[in-house]
Image (cartoon, rainbow, N blue to C red; front, side, top):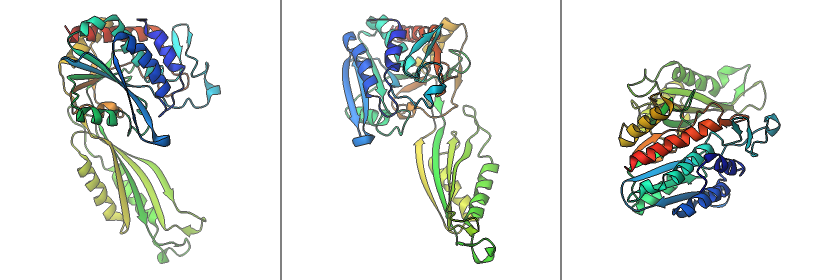
Length: 377
């Protein structure tokens, strides 16, 4: 098999697998892994437009068992005319591979697959697996979460998991992630009494009550951070009010609130806080909550130590450990084994002209290769 990650990354990018349609890109991954002796299992969940295709590939049945977790879906390219090269053409210009998914994260998937091709024999006696989902950039309901839940029920176990998200910040290898903050979204609806803006005493303006509650929430810090996590962050991400005319006080107003929280909080305590604040400012309100993932820190285990050493050997710099940023599919695996995230620099992810240096792509693959060699030695 080709051991250079560039051709595989190009093949993956040329499949326009906009979330949650990662299936055709999974065909490319399967065609790469099958000749290497991997058993390929396609696992689909959901129905109709919500259906998500996933791939679980495993080679070996012994211990230790190292899993690579990634995704084949990408965000939409946006205005394609704004790109300097077609977003799904995978053009190489100088040292840059340009295309949607080059960084997030088809480049990472290609780097790991190429590393496996170069170090296949080292895992003999142990097991290597890849879980590649088509639903990481979307709702993430029928992707890694569903696959992991199903495999655990079937008795599958892992010793460690490497997630190939683009964790590097300014340069490859400067940051790995050993945890993530939790994410809680609340939809708040405040009801009032509709009336004429010239006669506010005959009405009850729900916008005013909603804004008073939001002002308290956004001006009162949740915490100052902890040893391993930055301060929790509450943001108002949406506002809506029933407004049929400028001179009408509406009957209701809504807000969407997102909280990224550290290990001082949990879903129940945050829900209680929001209810308490809204109760101070509104008599008639409703709150609906959706948790995207709880806060976690995987700690420093064997894989984390080996990954840090491999990065330093390839780059000359020891990586910093972080728990910042958004969520990832690591939130579905951390309860089952040690999880650490490491991948390309994310400067251009989700942007126009998403791109990665070919040299950086190959260096990432070399780091993954060192990890494979050390982990199974």
